[in-house]
Length: 250
Ligand SMILES: Nc1ncnc2c1ncn2[C@@H]1O[C@H](COP(=O)(O)OP(=O)(O)OP(=O)(O)O)[C@@H](O)[C@H]1O
Ligand SMILES: [Mg+2]
Image 1 (tube, rainbow, N blue to C red):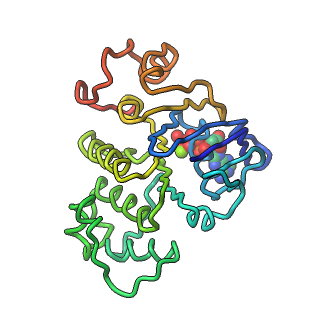
Image 2 (cartoon, rainbow, N blue to C red; image 1 turned 90 degrees about the vertical axis):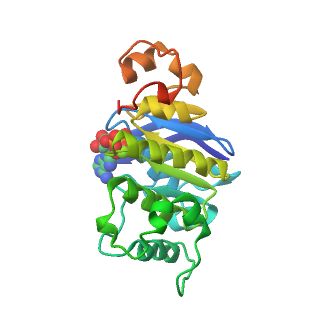
């Protein structure tokens, strides 16, 4: 579905991403994990057209999308939910959703019925008229995801959706990601909560200083000594069951 080959991103001549190749197949959850500054956001930004790649190829459903402006990437069906959430605090929850629908070119005259919102985000559905600034961290993340869904993406790029959330709220966000996949949305997920992410993802890529250093199925990587010692800091876990242990950011 998404194929990235030899991707490079530089800022002012300084290389942040070098020769990154990855693939996401329809219906998968694929994760990119890596330390701060590894280049995770830069990879997502290059795919979604926020920063121009300076080398390589990005193909979505067989067509080249590398270097397209972000609105054109959204129109093809890829939506990025950025790190930091980017919601408008002074607007209501409903207005935030309407703004996202407008941005994606879907003109909204008045409040639509929102069966999807009720089903996927019941906490938000009760707060449509509340200012977004009053939402809890978990609710704000849900709103960011709901905004992303307004343009009916086939693929979501999620940048650290659990960042800053308590383990309980992070768990809700991971649960929602799993439900979105069940709804048929393919997901590329950047996370630092490695243990929890590996329990959710089908496959993962480890990014270090702008390069992919490891990739494989989540099960393979969870038994890889380098991943365990660099990102989990404890002996290889006997199980991938997230409920066996409190999820901790790594
Ligand atoms: N707009 C920018 N201008 C200049 N340098 C940048 C810019 N954005 C990122 N960088 C640099 O590129 C490198 C990769 O950054 P990036 O934000 O992609 O990493 P990341 O893996 O997402 O990090 P984090 O975990 O902190 O979000 C870093 O060295 C960063 O300082
Ligand atoms: Mg980042």
